Length: 490
Ligand code: BES
Ligand code: ZN
Ligand code: ZN
Image 1 (tube, rainbow, N blue to C red):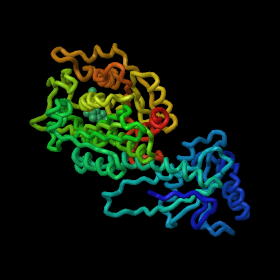
Image 2: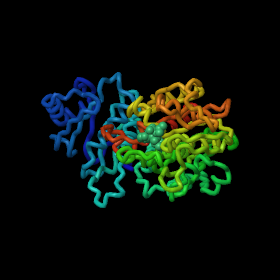
Image 3: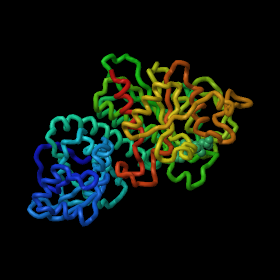
Image 4: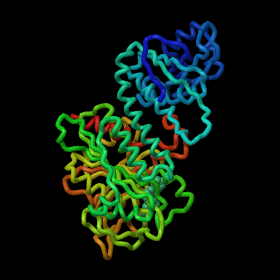
């Protein structure tokens, strides 16, 4: 992770200054323009620089300046700049200077902006993430330190501390999602989770197949039973609240280390990226790590069923009837609708902890990608206040969510001839809503519950978002961190 410092004085390395829309230079940009005898203005004129967000111009060996480079970046219209603009610009700086030979760079913030420059540092961290552990030759050598120049160095430093914790959580989620399924088996996923939590003094319990069998978590076992990589159920307990016995927030994450579809096998092309099917679980782990690093005054229980949906002579089948942990029986129609099954048992278990609220994150349905594409996650909730708070946290964190109905009318589609209900509708109509309605059947009355379907936002083929340079976005860590800090800390 690149080191970020805040200081009143700049050091060796490139100088980065800002321009607003229409070439309105920030005060420091003006100063360096004067020092370099108008070199910056000249360059802006000749390149028709407009100053829109992220637009960039670089002057090598500027006159009268000791820096190798003077870089000017657009921030757009002054009144429209948000913390997200600053984050994006930070990420663009990281991307632009990816191959620099300089050890450090200086970013000269405009203190007249009434926003914290710590967000530039946060953007640099998110934008410089890479996952290259399997490359035998690594080529990029980026800068190691960014110094953000501001008169409010002390405050910015303090504000940045929490953002750095959040970035660590996001890195964790991205690392997990990026790992291929031959490495990140359920056992390995559980072991690595425990290691991360141990480092920050958070308790992790790992349960194996035997436990699941004795407990009667048969839906988790059914999904897992074809794989030679045995399942795990991971329970993380973070007790940051003053009252260690105060009821926790339960976070439940889908942890499918691989989803082949099972006997209802996916076509090869759809299967190619399905190592991402544990992104919900990864987000739960990342969010708890981020909150624990910030010492958030809240109790959280994280529950992640870790399994592989594989194919063998021992596969569960379409037509099987399985008794869930809740006691309700479920008829299987398609073994590729496995996420809701493992979540059903995990959600039943989560409610035993008498939580204040239960939130689950899951790459649950392809249908949510048809509905919302790669911009918004689907939000489903039985509680308006929780849904509103999640929507607000989504806007603040720029991990946007859009609410869908969970109306009883859809439950018609879950009717089964021989079991309590089917796990899906037979036509595929309203696929994401029907999946949420199935989960809702396992939520007890009076429990506040929300489900985020993140299938469209956890893993992107397109790497054009500077804040997310890897395919794995780490979606979920920021919105959950924001929600909990906004609504649940004492
Ligand atoms: N894990 C998939 C959903 C998914 C698809 C996640 C693409 C990320 C990217 C899920 O288990 C699944 O296969 N869902 C089926 C459900 C259907 C059989 C009712 C789907 O969406 O096709
Ligand atoms: Zn599936
Ligand atoms: Zn799946």
